[in-house]
Length: 110
Image (cartoon, rainbow, N blue to C red; front, top):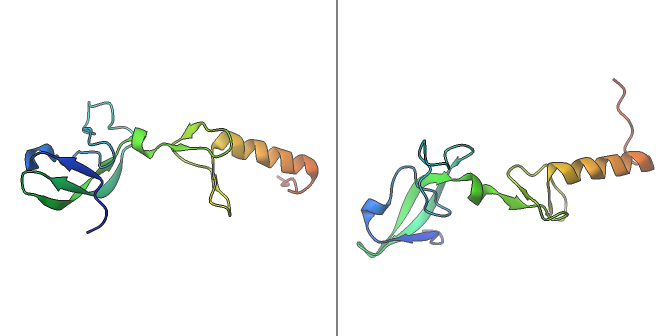
C-alpha cells in the first residue's frame, strides 16, 4: 500500500464520490462536482483497522496549485519549467512577452 491520504471512522463514510484529498462529497449538487478529476488514494478505517484503497476524485480545491512566481492559485498550470516550478497562465503570458521583447523568442508569422 502507499501512503495513507485520510482516515474514516466507518466504511459507510466512504462514498463513490469522495474527494481523496479533503474527504468532501464531490457528487452532482455538492458544489465540488465541476472540475473534479478521478483519483485514487488510501484511507485508514478505524472500524476495520485497515488501510483501504479508495477510488474517488480530487475536487477543484484540492487540485489547485500555487504559481511559484505570483503565488496565485491555478487549476491548470501553463508551464512547469526545468526547475520544477509551476507557472499560471498569466505569468506564462508575461514571461513570453518579456522574452519576445528581448528577441529571445521569434514572432510567429501568420
